Image (cartoon, rainbow, N blue to C red; front, side, top):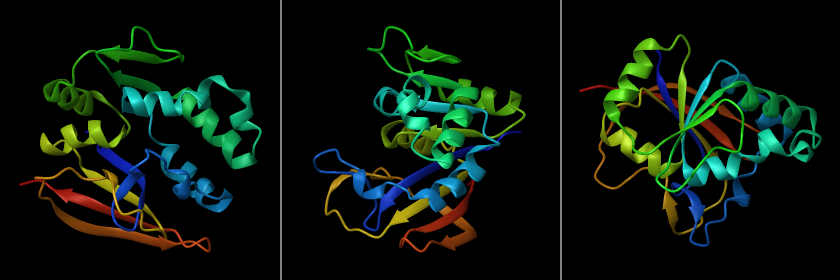
Length: 187
């Protein structure tokens, strides 16, 4: 059975976007992005909310994303090759290949997807991840902690969710970011 992985760049105080909706303070450097690529390469399916999908579209449609650096080029290829499922009531059609739109997030459908998948699945977007966390679907949490406190915004974890975690790995980077990985103990 595949694992559902929630991976995000976050501020030290647990936000994925600040009060203005910005997250440029979390942009990974080349070394961090190379490590991200190592983590993302085995993932063949991404689950996104509409806003996160719209943030990511450029990796599949804008060649300028890939020419920024070798790590960016590698990430663009990884992203384009993966299947993408976008949960949205307003998006009429996807703008990228290997993408389908689902109108509602169905936890049972995601459970079936995990059972049928031969590789891990990633959930992206804090709002969609909140639904997956509340449904008990997330098996692993990966956080890139950016050395900044933003004081408010969109939280990485929703209120009212309590998780028991088992530490798996950590790594620090020269740019001040820290990566931590946990498995979620299912109760």
